Length: 134
Image (cartoon, rainbow, N blue to C red; front, side, top):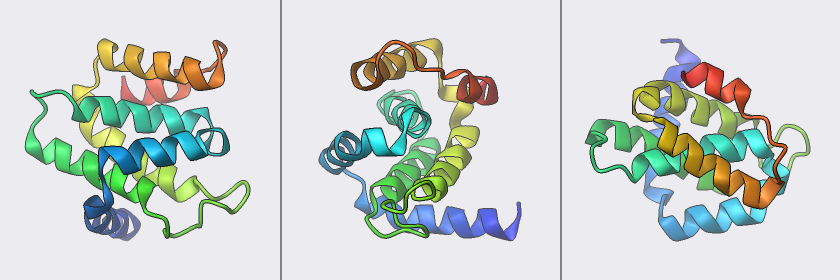
């Protein structure tokens, strides 16, 4: 693990205290279009994985850390910076997705894609993230 990954994991752990369902859905609804479909898809995959009772607590802690980081108003790159604002969020989400990919099944992907359809329409390409998580 690189120093950058270790730093990001520590920030995610600290950010986990900011996670709640209300904060999560509030930020996601407010910033979905700005963040883009890829970020939203990653967030939704993690959120729906978190809801599964059979996912171990360690994996849930990773997810809560990543989602807390996403919710956190002040992060490495402010979310209002056009073109860059969600890059660090996507990095944190990517680390979490990689670590919990074994718990993301077709049902979770379908739930996330259905919600994406509500916000972005039918023509959302999720193949890049799907290929990375298997």
